[in-house]
Image 1 (cartoon, helix red, strand yellow):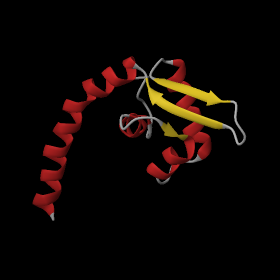
Image 2: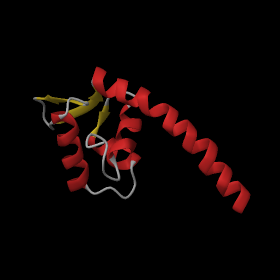
Image 3: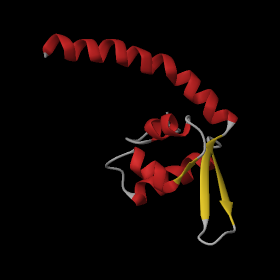
Length: 97
């Protein structure tokens, strides 16, 4: 749970599942996340072996993030939980609304 604890880590996994993404694209994909929190979560996930960070020596600098095989397997393990949430939480909202 430490690997995916926090408000944004699971969302980051889902965005990174789409492929290689730059920092600015991650910020736009996750409205409300601060640069500080995004950078911190990416560092933690990189240290855990879930995220790969590729920095290119260019002007302007370019940094790209992607999932490692471990990150991909974690995403696959979380998919049933996401399916459960979509089925039950969306169903509960529909029943209330």
